[in-house]
Image (cartoon, rainbow, N blue to C red; front, side):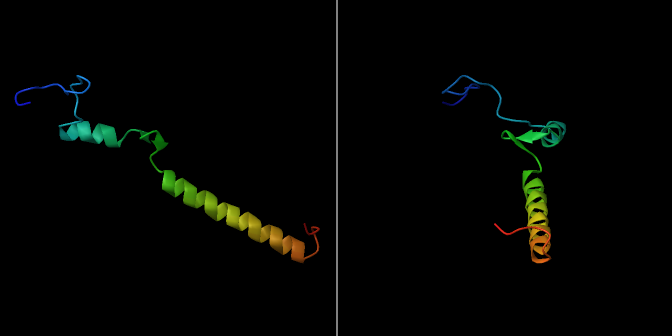
Length: 69
């Protein structure tokens, strides 16, 4: 519908930030779509530490410090 300023489905006005300052404010926000901004980085770090724990446990088991499963 030409000339209309509202969404035809829900009547909303906003279509997102238009100015560089508005875009910067959105990108500086802590969350994005309900997830933390650096989610992938945090997941990779957790995966690394879980691998290290597994490695240390295997070494301890081979050294006889722990009993096998």
